[in-house]
Amino acid sequence: MFYGSIPALITPFKNGAIDRKAFADLIERQIEGGSSALVPCGTTGESATLSHAEHREVVELCIDVAAGRVPVIAGAGSNSTSEAIELVEHAKTVGADAALVICPYYNKPDQAGLEAHFRAINDAVSLPVILYNVPSRTACDLLPDTVGRLAKLPNIIGIKDASDDLGRVSEHAALTRDQQFVQLSGNDPSALGHRGMGGAGCISVTANVAPDFCAAMHQAFDDGDLETAQAIEARLIALHHAMFASPSPGPAKYLLAKTGICKADVRLPIVTPDASARATIDMAMNAAGLG
Image (cartoon, rainbow, N blue to C red; front, side, top):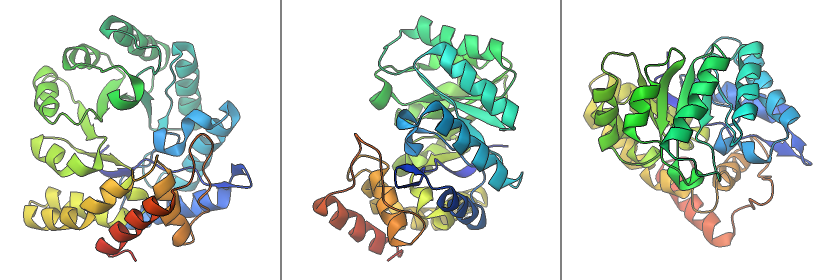
């Protein structure tokens, strides 16, 4: 069910509130561009600064606009296990196809704590869960042996790995060979390498601004046309890096504002890209042929 280019959607704001029209337009653009699923309320969606009511609103709006045309993987993580369970329950209630659940951040749980966290979610809600490991943001790392144990649970169906350790794709595969376990990259610059190691796709920041190119890269790989996949990736590599020329999702929103999709507004403590970052983003946009 989950493969190819999957955007980690930005959450558009206007006058401090969610811009529902811009979000709906963004979703339509993603579906038209060939994105294979949608992720609202992930890190790129500024989930950390959404209120609980806004979080639910964004997930519900994404499901309504997608209208079954592509699956919706609802961001549903928290550093509080009980709160994560509530968000996963909401995702199930409103019709999400799966939940993306980040490792608890700031708390710095050990492997036993991480396993207990995800086991509690698995036991509480019958909805497919994709583990989300991003050590650079959470200050904890979900190690392969723990992933292997969690993969045996009925509702844990995959992982978004942003550790940038491509060797883990093979480690996870070896540990989950008896399960149908989907591996998705969480880093655009290494997504093609992740596919080559056995991954199924990428939950992508870049796909917000270049959905057609990202989808085409994955499709070329699936078609066995590695030369075309590599050519597209070479075209996008500067853009991948530019998406973090300043704190994300500032760069993505800056580019989407230039194309008229939404305003560049972000929520504090994230700020809009400064002049130096904007110059880097503009150069990358032109290199990708989006200018």
